[in-house]
Image (cartoon, rainbow, N blue to C red; front, side):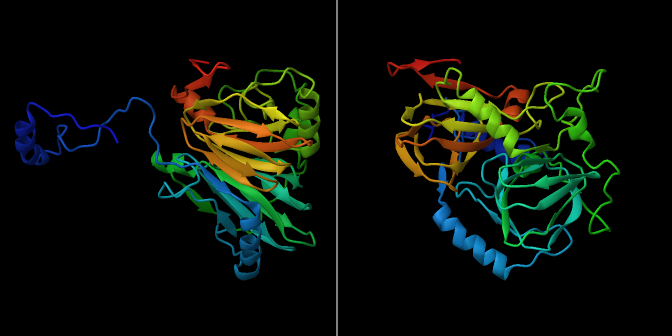
Length: 358
């Protein structure tokens, strides 16, 4: 806790308080918490959710909760105990369960959202008339204020990770939500038009894209992402994440969403990355494998299906002691932090000293 300093004018400040309040004004009081701190201080905590704990809870949700029209989904929220709501101070992460034959009804909202498919195949998502498959390992996007619904015709319960920048949206007082009168929206005659235009990632129709346009791509299939990650394994390793690729907006090469970035990361066998810390927050989902993330000296041993969020400005590094590779999916708020000029990071040098800035 920051040390409180004695104010020479403490009595005057206290005497002013009541009179200023009449005019909706204030001056800093001796017992007010400090406005600034030497380094970032966050109530958001480092939290590890284990799949062995989550799996039975998701089974209960599937059996006990219904999926009804109007916006409510069947989701298990990953709650950060240091915050009033949310997984981090900028986004919510939830695990959605959908059963065979169910339809998650059509609606739209301000919050940007995406789905990373954890288990199962055979669902579809429709976003502003475009329809795409949702299969294990796929990333599908729902940009803010786009109509979207989901449908599933598989044989077993299907689950995916839902992430929305709700916490950031609420802090900006920009909440809009609109349900649709129809359970599902009409699908376009060409249901995958944005993929046909931009899905190669290398070629696109000629002409300049509109300034500030949303990412036109709505789906990033698993096969494409995994192939790219395997190719990147032949490059020099990233000192902090080993092998890592970011999902990109094909129009400008930037992050797929303006407020959230998504990455796919591989920790090769017997890898130990360097430590760093940065502002902003992130959440890891363990796609496969096992390993350890050390956060401010505390080891978190993770396995397939686990989740881990790292406290802002906490030192963290990764280890893979096994003989098999580990793959992690990551969501972070670096795009929002960078756009606002609030993203900073610091590395721990190989000799143990600090290197800053990166």
